[in-house]
Image 1: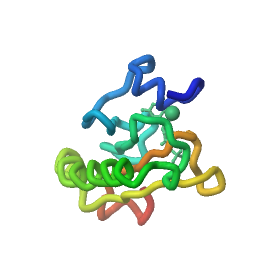
Image 2: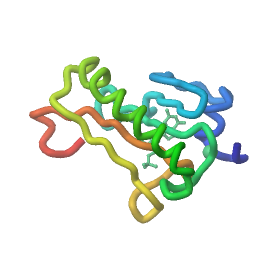
Image 3: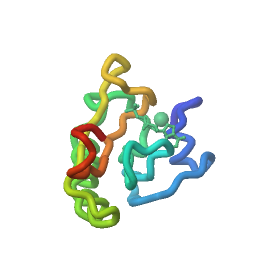
Image 4: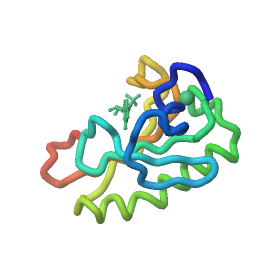
Length: 114
Ligand code: 5GP
Ligand code: ZN
């Protein structure tokens, strides 16, 4: 756990969130400011700032959780597809320095942007 990390505080239960999936190493929860209904963040419970900082087995667990969540998330909001992505580094739009994957439901009529 890293002090002053919002996502570590969510893992610790100190900040409320809406859990979508959880296991020993991975937590998925709804984005507080969703780009689309069902927008979900998938994080390692351990604090790692960037994708490349995660041990390979943890990165695999995070990605596998994202894979498993795509179908149920899309079904829940009747989406046509989804954007599955990591913003990695501040210049790439990473605002929270605890690596996180986005699953953003996409719709035929969303204009090409989530
Ligand atoms: P980034 O821009 O770093 O890739 O994405 C950060 C995401 O975290 C944003 O979509 C933002 O809405 C979300 N977020 C920031 N703070 C919180 C929070 O306290 N709770 C939840 N559920 N999401 C958050
Ligand atoms: Zn953290």
